[in-house]
Length: 143
Image (tube, rainbow, N blue to C red; front, side, top):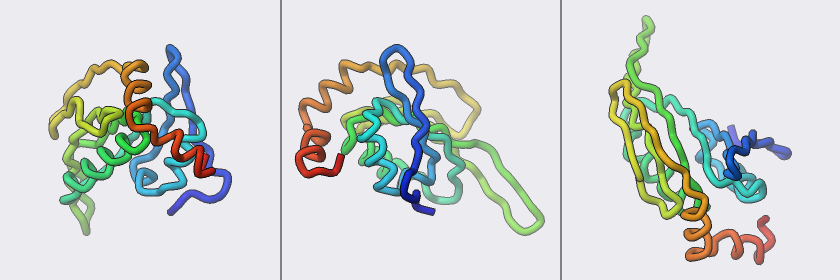
């Protein structure tokens, strides 16, 4: 379901970096990303439970969102399987850190693993200066 008017993005600030928490399925909705811009988020923490054959679609979507908003996205996707009497799901993992230029900086597999990464505020600022998406959005009155 798309967010309604007044969508509230949870925000955490740590060491001068603004983290927003976005549920994986909310990544599809433009109003969520407008809120990311309005709240001046630097990094998005994104828990998700993706299964089936959606691996490449998620990678494409999150590369685009990281690039067009010049943010880090740390997607944490479930691993393992779930079976009910009617259905069976396999969660493929692929937790990853997407950089503010839209690239995948590091990724995990479908195994239980640990990712340790750095969020570099100067790298975020550099990407924002180069691409200028936020200033263009402000000029057009979007944020």
